[in-house]
Picture 1 (tube, one colour):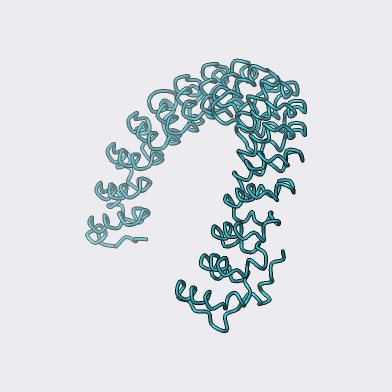
Picture 2 (cartoon, helix red, strand yellow; picture 1 turned 30 degrees about the vertical axis):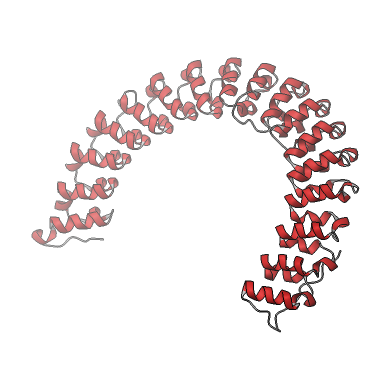
Length: 448
């Protein structure tokens, strides 16, 4: 707060006042009457905050230049202008360009039509609510509003809510605008087409009769924009329409879960779903999960899809190879026989070294264990006890992560002279006698 001082010469010192109002946005309200009527002081305050205009003298609130400076800084400062300035097109337009909602403080004449009203709704579509009834019924203003924000359709007159051109413009900008149109248009086929052509996912907002219209549903499904999971909203008859379901599944494979049982058992439909979603095999029927081409396609995209394949396909070498090449962990879904296939296990380990976990037959295979540990020290835990005591394999792991790998090694291996020598030379961190070893209770031996 800046209390006034008694004497006039002391009470108003322009330089001091300018400094104060430029430092504190509320300072002008505590200045003396002379300061609040001083043009330089008020302009300095406005430069700091347009809302400081409210504390200017009545004369300055009727000053065009000062008012222009205020509304340029903050459109809502229009509310503090004199009545004449709130009817000035230039002042009001400037305020609305800064803040569209400032139109609510303008005269009724300017809230009815003209550049100021258009500037307001272009800056903020919600400004439409502050126009007069005449302004809300002005198509030019309404068109500017819905083009900026389709939802502003809710503020226009009942006559314009039934205007096809205006409603189409609104729904193309925002799919949710349809709910604000007249009953005649919201249920009209032409508007429904326009909605889904602008955004296919808007199908969910249409009336049931439109969601049962094959042409409208196809128009939604063939839009380039993502449509998401919308097949569940359409009529049951269309869920059994191969063309509709294929189109939707190409956009979003998850739509397969809402297709009819017959189509979920159709290889072409499932393949269409796999184009966009590698999880789609999960929703397929058993017969499709036994189809070599479909499962191979799924596993090429996502190795773990092998888990949904039939037992016969999970025993297919080509499919297992494709799955493990994409994700080594897919080895766990292969048949027992294929988990004992050296080539498949090698492919899985190259993709994910810890896939050794699922290859019990090869935990004693020095070459494969070395391959895994060289890529990831953590795979050491799945090696046989004998190979974990192998000096070369142990060093591979220890040199990657000493503190992590040592819990899988026994004392004898860690205190091997050559191992200690190499570790000391490489890590510059000699093992002391009190260093906890793998025999500690905190690191139980890994069972084979």
